[in-house]
Amino acid sequence: MYSVLKRCKNTKFYVDSIRYIRFAPHESYFMKIFRDKASLQTAIAKQRNAGKIGFVPTMGALHEGHLALVKQALLENEYLVVSIFVNPTQFNNSEDLKNYPRDLDTDLAALKKCSEDIFVFAPSVKEMYSENVSAEKYDFDGLDQQMEGTFRIGHFDGVGTIVSRLFDIVKPDRAYFGEKDFQQLQIIRKLVSIKNLDIEIVGCEIVRAASGLALSSRNQLLNEQQKNEATLIYKTLQEVKKKIKEEAIEEIYKFVSDSFKKHPLFRLDYFQIADEATLKPIKEFDKNKSYRAFLAVYADEVRLIDNIALN
Image (cartoon, rainbow, N blue to C red; front, side, top):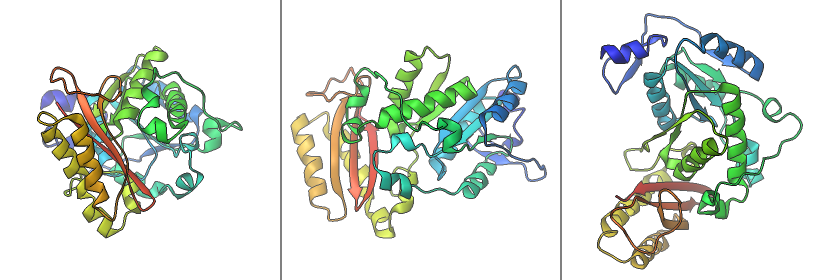
């Protein structure tokens, strides 16, 4: 326990177990919020030699999944930067961008429950893109051509563009991403390789509601019936994990397709069993390799994604 507390000496919280972090109620600190790159970089520079800097990039609408990343980053670094920025270049649907939930005050309140000693970077679009709101082009070695990339053209160029710019501003030692967006996680790892960045990318486990629904900012757009019935998504993935060692791949694809055809509230967008390293679909199961099952479904106009490790 002493080693954990020692690593967290510059965060204003105490640890009462390895897993739980609580803000000390008798102490009072002010969360540092930055709107421009220059002031954030000045603040970071003052801490650069005092310990490791962790970074959690988000688009806001924070939930327990985001906070799990924040808590892990607080435990593993002396300082933490959290960005809150809805990035326009990763949306290929203008209505999706318009409807994306935004509530900075609520996000800040959520972060304060972890620690007030966090640098929060909440820039404007102009601050991040100036007058040219467009994405750079990247060669992700085919990782961006699978699944989400097939249905959301240009999405990962937008992700790569904003994450690259944020990395350049923060220059973190470690950056934290959730495995719910596993394809994105692999692309960020590729981005770090492409740019030869000295940043450790930390993948964190999916956080789920009691129903099994993977936590997502988009869940706020679901009605109560949809939230309750969305347990079908995780249950289907769990069944896939059971079936993968016993049934042919094509039979599993049919099982998933039939499961969603029978359900009136959800429409299957895609399902894929893929190699974790390449994200390419597989034709047969090899117990010596690492695979994941991925799917995306629509609940009315709300698109939900999830995945599960198969071995």
